[in-house]
Image (cartoon, rainbow, N blue to C red; front, top):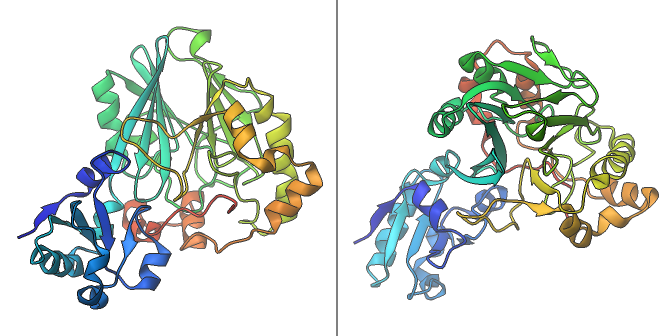
Length: 363
């Protein structure tokens, strides 16, 4: 017999000593388009002939789109004596899983909210009885619940840029929390918000030591912005990741944006202290995510790990523009929704988000 495992359990076990063998039984094209990072693909129709490729000493969790095909695979494997679980709800359930890690510096706390199926990262920055939220998804109840757990009232909501691969929940959360919504007007939003200015600062209870400084860093989009918290945490959005930099080619201005991204990195981000901790807006499939560790790196570590950060401007532009990749699924529709150019409620557009993030320059 096999059991059902929910997506939250799988998220909690990945990257630990209890990590299961994740077997994806969808067709190769489905798997290539979007998968769990550690999964191995054996299509259901081939499983009987390839069962020897599935380890017998580890629990196996079978995966498909919705949990139907994978239940058949789980039944087949359970008859071989293996310990097997079926991922209930499949990849559709995986897309909805969130977990969190909290970082602290003196009295300020930064909660990294990880949307595991999308590789999306968002943040609550809190001190005293207030919190700011950066890059929330449309699942606004996640942030409201976390704020309640920490004893915070959400007072300001920010996006780092006009998102292209997922729906922004910033408007929804600001409305629900009766909070200020802050955006960079260099990106073309068509609804009411508080425009960010160069070097704007926002204070949480406790004064200047908890100051959030907004620094425009155009390159991924014209309005890309990073937020520096307590002179230590760098919420870098899609400007700088732990495994790459933001794509400059999404808006058909690849060379222009690559030049501005280079200057954003070298004239602003890389001038921050070496021990500043970069907390990005996404992570790629090669980044190992562990339940008890944030997705982050110091600027010093990134200077050593990411060779393009040492390139001169011409080398950087050539490297970034040579690595064009397919745009995120439903790119145009997501952009239009996040700009405010649709009357359809954002929650009714969730199907547009299915799939991985594709907002970094590939290695």
